[in-house]
Amino acid sequence: MQYWIIKSEPETYSWKTFVKEKKTSWTGVRNYEACNNIAKMRPGDLMFFYHSGANPCIVGIAKVAGEAYPDPTADNPRWLTVDVQVIKAVKVPVDLALIKAVPELQSIKLVKQGRLSVSELDKRQFDLILTLAQTKL
DNA sequence: GCCAACGTTGGC
DNA sequence: GCCAACGTTGGC
Image 1 (cartoon, rainbow, N blue to C red):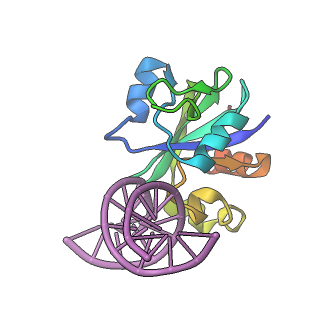
Image 2: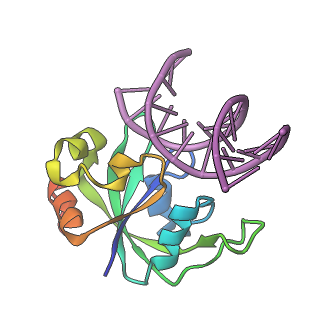
């Protein structure tokens, strides 16, 4: 089991839209490192859904719903996409400021490499964020 | 709106 | 293959 953070600007694709659709294909990743992460995803992996922009915070939990496959919106088949499915919203959104304030989370890519759209967490970090979100799976 | 961080492009 | 210039992202 692996853990991830995927992010989106709410103006582009919001958590609200995701909840309405229940499942979506995470297309449009055009960054090598992010794409590598998608390639490593396995069905059942868990992830946080993060909103960038005016109010940057983690808003929900989702899971990987299948294997990665070539992104049909890309002109090169090396770019991958994966299907992700809503699990639930977090009880309390976790602000980026709060994440940055927690020593155990200061090393995560979300903080260190803000522009990476798909990043990895270990179980400890995932559980810690769940706690901050006052949410149980 | 500004700026830092990072990726990409293109000249050499 | 290096590096400067430029574009994009995203926090503040």
